[in-house]
Length: 77
Image (tube, rainbow, N blue to C red; front, side, top):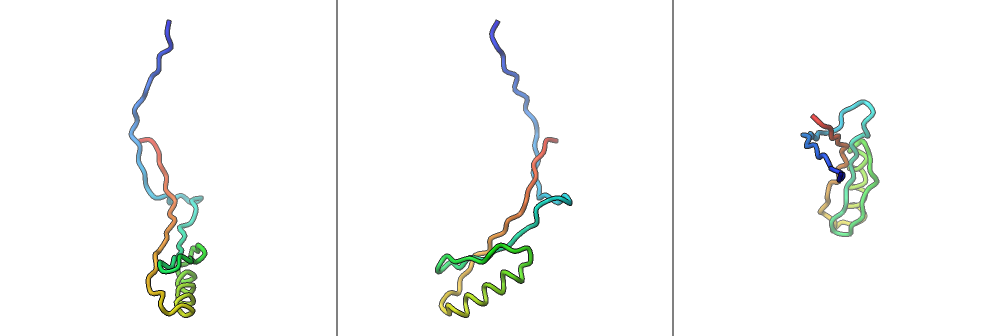
């Protein structure tokens, strides 16, 4: 007798995690010119303050990249 594998195909779904215990969505901004970035924050206003401070000290740094960390969940249907 030989061992036999059983493979079961399931349908999965994926969506943003909105459960009460989900991690918060966080934002950060990265300067595209020099690569420096803000700390991650839940409140975008904190990130915006970092950006204005950075451009104030580096007047030629006009381009930035938004970095969003959003929790997701996957489960079988």
